[in-house]
Image 1 (cartoon, rainbow, N blue to C red):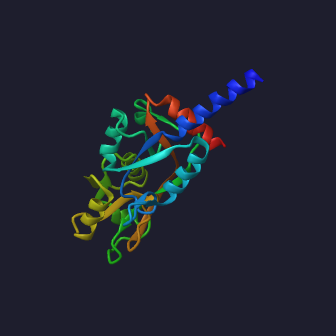
Image 2 (cartoon, rainbow, N blue to C red):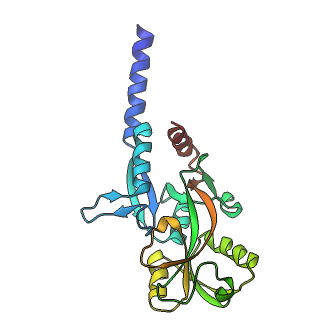
Length: 220
């Protein structure tokens, strides 16, 4: 009876501590993944997934917005705990840890204006394009390999946010935007798709214990 009573107290304290943990989630302006609503609440695929995770971990969340390039720095410095839609690359594996299981798949998409003269996989017309990319995104290197495969050249233009990249397209500063399909863009012409890849939770190498809890929750 004494052993059972002691065990019950320890279990209760552990669960309570977990419930009081607030996990800082970094996000960018990927429409439909993590969106802040006018009332201050959040919605989207990433939010729904994190809600399911919290049923196992007891975590609460604080969502922190910034550009992708800055979020990579924030994660490395520890001012956020997780990014929720990162592809694994050898370069990132030097500085970050990833969840064991992916939480979805993403196409890389080439967008152009609806009234443009570019059409799907018209590689000859792609030659010489000015293209907008998200700074720090793995899609930049993947697009470079795709362009080599199809023998066309382009000028790369880096932007801090999705909004800035599409503003450049809307104002004719660039001919196209390369962005992941999680961005959920509407009102543009899709002229190319490449590298259908899984995406993962990513955290700093100092967060091994958090990652173990996350992996267990995803498995459950």
